[in-house]
Length: 109
Image (cartoon, rainbow, N blue to C red; front, side, top):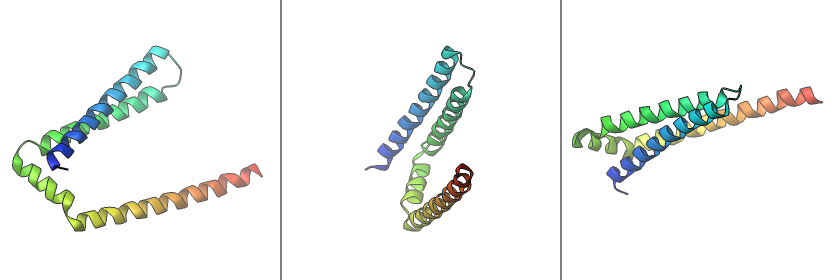
């Protein structure tokens, strides 16, 4: 896939995040519930989407920055480091979940 198309897909997904966040805020305000979780979560999603859109415009402001970003994302060393970090984060997550299940499981016995 061409890198510029990949960037456009990322832009569309960020716009989708903003729209989803705004819809969550609107739905939360229309239902008038006491739970503000939906509106808070919608605000967080919308802010993250705006940050991604800003990043997209910073990357695509000229061809030189697009090429630098393409090199960074396709560099084998960066990909290996990213995969190793994902594996470690997932392992830590699983260990924390197992500890939480054991800790909260003892309370139910």
